[in-house]
Length: 348
Image (tube, rainbow, N blue to C red; front, side):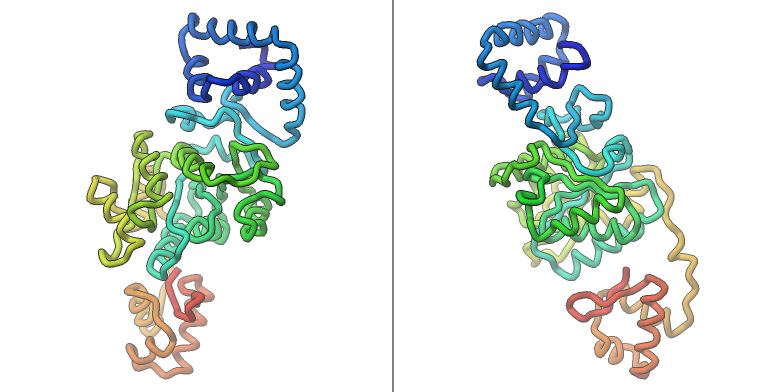
């Protein structure tokens, strides 16, 4: 390749030559000197086409946003090992996060259930005060839950998009506020598409290889048998990554994907301990050190089974309504419980 000064232009130049895929370009670059010589020969031959050369230079100069290429030191080493790594990554936010070896990808369905949402929030909460960064796709549903849970627990989070990063094309538009919050809190937005690239249907399954490729492990919270979530899981398996799946009710469509993964040999996700073990990290014991009185513990143990409304808890415990309200408020202050969108109290 050329000098460090212009190496990224010539990488871009190669991507503009018809008939050469990005995967082929990367394979050439990694190959022995003979094949690398072939790359240089292709460049030299194509440079003779002055119009093509000038058009390529003009297109390259239009890239005004921050980016890294696969030739740069900042490019994540783990992502380079997948079959078809993106040659360029455009970004906004803290690019240094890509050097963290403790990235964890979390994916799931767009449709949310109380069971899956509650467990995703709890798992991320139990990972607080560790060096883990949560990676997801900023989609509506479980991706958003994962990002927000990370933010709530002061864990940096990385969003990989299937569109450009400009606010006019960022997808989904309903998550622009969340995207900005991710950046404001020291996180990162990533895309292999230039900033004004509008979302295309085929961008999203292609994006999933980056989600899986960035991390040592992928957690699958929910998803149907045929879904984008399962594509991400398959990308992780193809890349020799660990896959953890949350088991669920066999009659729930959104548990069929994780259950099928477990049947096929994926790791079963029972608690955050499974994740901490593979990353060799210590568990946050802050919540375990909180002392509860008998009535608080009675309610907390009940909520560990499932989420309940205030009326249901009253019927289960026979506690006075006013006392029960006080207990719920105390659990909220201790960051042990919260009221969800279904007006149920659930543990955090």
